[in-house]
Length: 205
Image 1 (cartoon, helix red, strand yellow):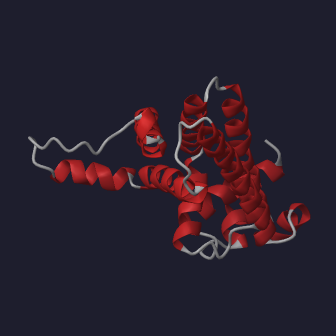
Image 2: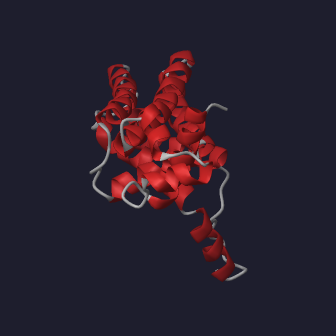
């Protein structure tokens, strides 16, 4: 792993756990035994480092969604592929999910423009799926942004609340039928099913 790659890996972990404001250049460079000047050789400043990490990692998610949705056979499969791929990619890269949750809770104050453009890519893919479903009279006409919020919000919340849900399970009555633990594959399929049913017209329910 190159020095630049080590810096990116270390910074991503710190941004995920401490947030942008809570992470200093020293926090990133010192554990690696790298001077500030060496870090600045690779990156202009902390903001550029943050931008590169979020943009490149969200692009991976968007690329995977674009590929898998493109391979789906019908409109319902496209919607399911969109949601399950989103979930799978964020679950594989939990640090990015933590960073996204921080951005959402902070009103997106530090959300880089290039990273936002990658999120817009995913929104456009979803919009295309819904529009195609409407044209085929399978889906109702619904604002894509609302569906995007449901999907991204539920997935990131699920990833970010793992420890809380473990505590909830410990405190629940042993005979309770409330399920609080899910595999991401299981959860994403359930989310996809709920979203799909909410979009369907009365005739296709």
